Amino acid sequence: MFENKSSRYITRGVNETLSIHMQLLLWNLIDTLKEDKNIEVDYLQVFRFKHITNNEKYNLSITHSQEVPEYKKEYLFNVDNPISEKVFVIDSGDYATMLLAEEY
Image (tube, rainbow, N blue to C red; front, side, top):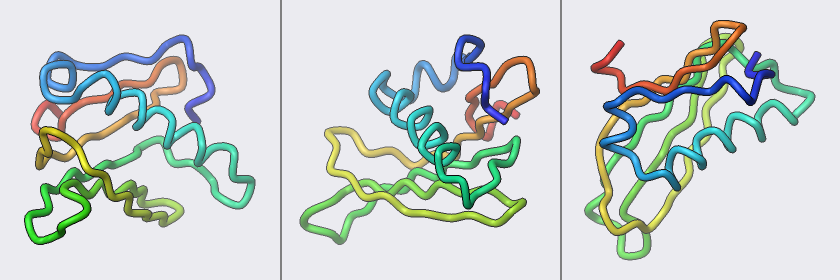
């Protein structure tokens, strides 16, 4: 899964909602997961963005998960404009698409 790096697409919603830095971060998290030989990468990767209001150091949580096999990891960041969104990245085999959950 996610082998074809030259055929990666984003939807209009992702382009308007996530900065290019965040988009590249999500692709990089998937690539990093692929490098771990102990984890099988599922065709559907899920990223949940949550604005944190009660933490002095960080204001954004991104939880990266997949269902089969089960995987879940949380990352904390301090960003200028924290958002609350759910993003799917789906690999069809020939290409991968990053989209907002509401665009699915």
